[in-house]
Length: 445
Image 1 (tube, rainbow, N blue to C red):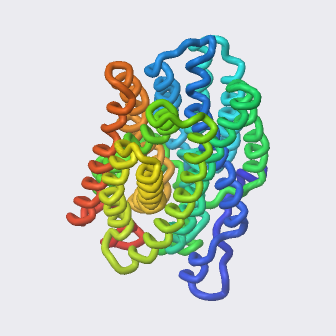
Image 2: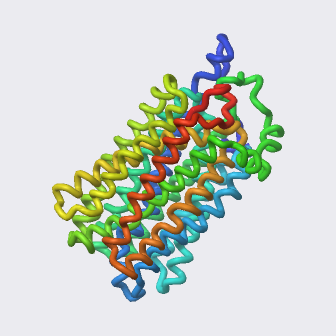
Image 3: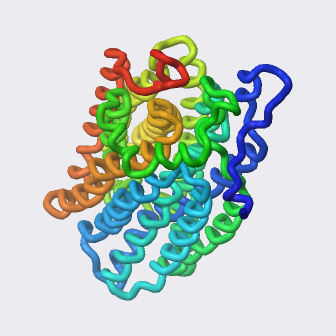
């Protein structure tokens, strides 16, 4: 078998089974580095579009705001429908080969957008990016959960999701810089092609055995590959329907994604058109804020979530809910204040709080389901949060902008952030139950 197809369980020491399952297996740290690097390219490729949106609109394509918004919606539309297909096979021995193929597909598709000479071809290229990213996003978090013990997952996901702000910022900065010097087409080439190297690196990783690091299992008790395949597949989605804790987490995540997706897609354009900033200043300042507040916020969320979860029931969900409730007024101020001395600090505070929830809520989603169903749970959450979140969000804001103004259209975003916080906080207060075999009654959320 190629290295990526060899299931790896944690090394067994001479001590107890608990000690054996408490240490990350061989290659876990290398996998974290590689998958985090890929996550950086993941978000760089996504956010090169908003960075060059104004240039595309002024190009020979002559697009409306609604059509610009549809470039984001097309990606997420394909992404959300493709994710369940890959998630159904997210516990198989060849899952890392799916990840590598997905990374290669989205990298080529990103570069292909630079060759588009019609709106249809540009829209098709962005849709193809969604196919590749779906394979990666559905499977990679489940792989990391299988590499590391439960007590470390908040911090592990903080590192993994810390690539989101870095990649997003690089998308804005790289896209804006290349667009300024070489045009928007070249920006897609620069963003897409380096991902092919990351795809090759994925094939060097070894596949961890699902559930091998969960506290209730010893390596001897870990399921064999036949049991894993029977526990995964499309039937895994049926097990999620009655999981109340999982449903609450995903519904709040959908509202969060509506708000965050709208901010991410339209903020650079908002700063240029409504606040009068140049493309270079808007993308540069926005990128700097995103990379600093996003990286710091994601790390804070992971560490605080791990610490609070050992002391408070559903600690991860509390972190996510409270951070969103505090974030909502800052989002509103960032979109309504006219003074840079007010809207820049408000935007920084909003971004920090939005990113704090990233690691905790994904820990909840993966922790509230049995190990063989993790990829399916992640895929189902991807489908739901994008169907209700950033598939309609960029397009809807674009339509509202065409009908009124962009300054008025974006005011739906703080409402979505507030709804997200309310759902997660009510879920934490009510102590909704879900499936968590490693803690009995207590859940990671």
